[in-house]
Image 1 (tube, rainbow, N blue to C red):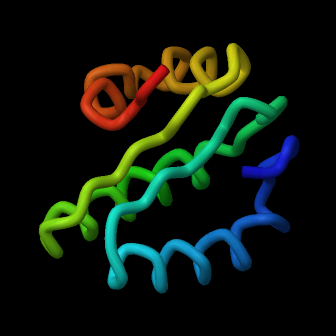
Image 2 (cartoon, rainbow, N blue to C red):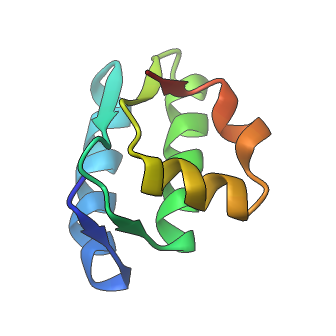
Length: 86
């Protein structure tokens, strides 16, 4: 994940995720994320659900404090609990 995940960054991320969740286990490294848009968080949740339906694992690895704060601020902690690692 890039440092700034805003609306302009979503299209290439979405394209990568679409291919990845159809191919196997997905691990999204978020240690360098400084700012993330709400839409990006929902994109990750959607990708995780698609991976689950395809019987593949999906993990957000080493989420930064900014990433964790955004998840918490939006009340999505429960939804991300099963996919965040580290």
